[in-house]
Image (spheres, rainbow, N blue to C red):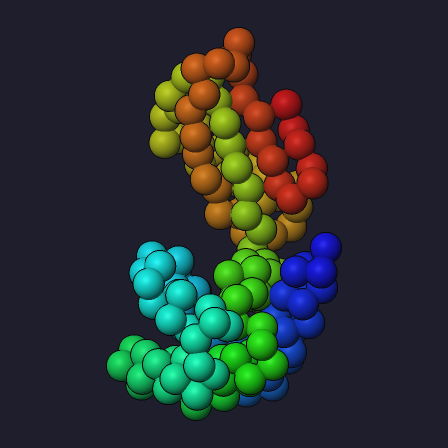
Length: 163
């Protein structure tokens, strides 16, 4: 629960900055890229997040990484602030929450569709359009196949499940 409150606080702060300067979408991409880099490169994640290593050394590694991937000034300041506050280990949670907030700002909802059989692209488009009409938002649909289902489809948008 604490991770969620920390993630929410930092994600909302970054989104407010993004709304103010009109760059919320670019921050979304930058933060996602950085968080994915840390999740892919476990040694890099350890070098930055592990408190057993020297604080100054970890911060210099972070600065070099930020410089190498060419993040914006705001994102650089944001990541350094998160690091200085000892919250860099929560960057994945912050990223997840920020992605949701940025999607809401843009009027996009993410949904999952699980079906027993393979669906045609026409059927998937019809489902997407129907969900979009019902929610009033653009729908990004993740389609999965689960042979364990007896039949039909299960659609999930946030907490709402349609069977």
